Image (tube, rainbow, N blue to C red; front, side):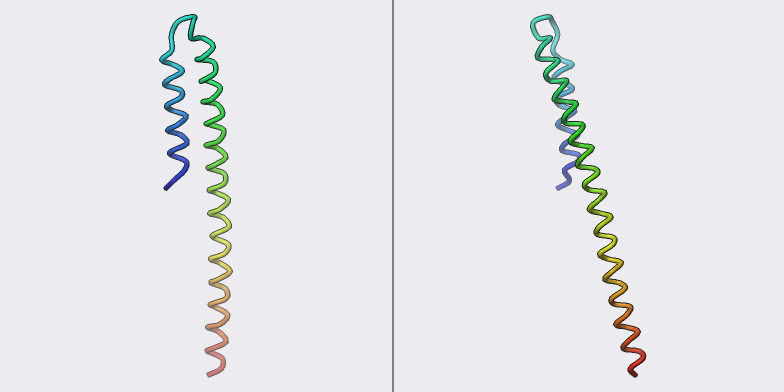
Length: 80
């Protein structure tokens, strides 16, 4: 399951809730929800950065494994 769409959906829901509150009595709650939206979007950015870093590390692992396979293939060809 992809965490980023879920995090963005959460931020969307909080933004909708914050925008739906009208009237002076709900002003503090709307502000509170707006803060939650900001934190949810910050979290979404962190999730995205972590996903990019993970993808980058995975690419490096794949390249190292391919180099190992290539080395073994060269060694097998030179032996005969």
